[in-house]
Length: 76
View 1 (cartoon, one colour):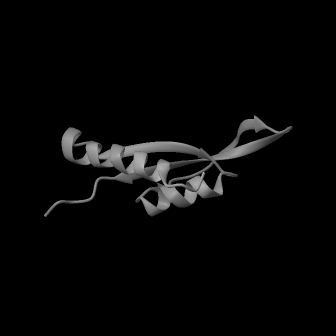
View 2: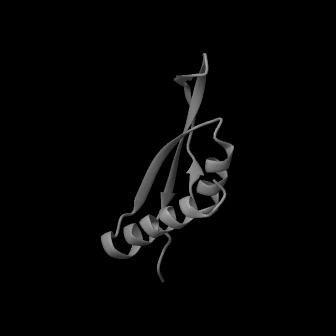
């Protein structure tokens, strides 16, 4: 945690999806209590697109999930 490994891996994946594969959209789902991950995803260009209520049962309670997506930046 907090060593930049997740950022490096996700940045590499996003660069490949943009430059090599040409994907227009990348989606993910994150549990709403994972604040660090949400912050990282937002820093890398993902935006929240809604909420999945009571998506998972963890620690004896239901937790919401947040669908997020990133649209490939325009190249001009």
